[in-house]
Length: 367
Image 1 (spheres, rainbow, N blue to C red):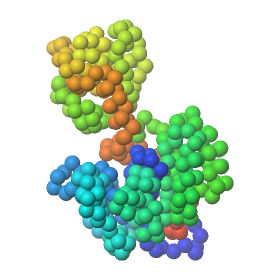
Image 2 (tube, helix red, strand yellow):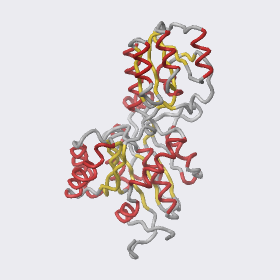
Image 3 (cartoon, rainbow, N blue to C red):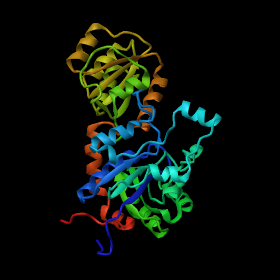
């Protein structure tokens, strides 16, 4: 680390070009790495996008709650959420426009003695514009440096990052490319990385796709499907589902198919008792029955023996699968196993020293 760098309070705004790219996970993993450098870290999420389920505090974002608890941040290391993007707040803004001026925003996000404030931006570059708090708005007002997280769908991820660079200019100090399929990691680490670097976009990390980070808890599926739980297994919020299987074939074919899957949710008709039993003899984490039909007693007994929750839903099979796929596309970080996973991914695939150099941030301790 160059000797010329000095410890002064820094602000880093972590954004993305689309929602559910992995911002919260990146913030958490980055905070852990910065702390390992002896740095004092604070956290802010100016625009709340995950409203609290606790009605006692309508401005508390669930990501803020989870990250602050996981990092054990004191009250002086958490900045207030200025607006929450829930429907009542949006409707009120449409009829009674209320924007914070620049000094109000800078005061709310002002340094309080920490080495670095990590600010989690909105879901994309436009979200929050209604309140004057889009990512470019926040960056301009606070003069914070920006790091973008991009989810890898294809090599065309470069298009979105080039467009973001045009909007953000020199405020963009670098990017993280997330959720790269393992068979495409070589392409991402060579062609994609080299292209972005040639266009003055530093690539701090390329993170591989993992089943854990894309998994969904059974509890989240219950909420997504508005499902009735037909038995009472323990640890429902700790049971993670990694893939979907549809039970629409005969029992023998289903059993062979199920045995090739891992930590799956099986969706099948409430009257397909053969499929239900086959699912319970394999790596099934959750059984979803469509049509609001009750399973037989022997099915329930077996499910209780192997501690597999059975959910009953009103939807047909295709609608149920579509809703579960939405849950996979909108996964959140709120499980301890994912925290451990992102810490490992960032340690292995993120260049913390290069990011700190770009930010002009010196470590407090050296090895």
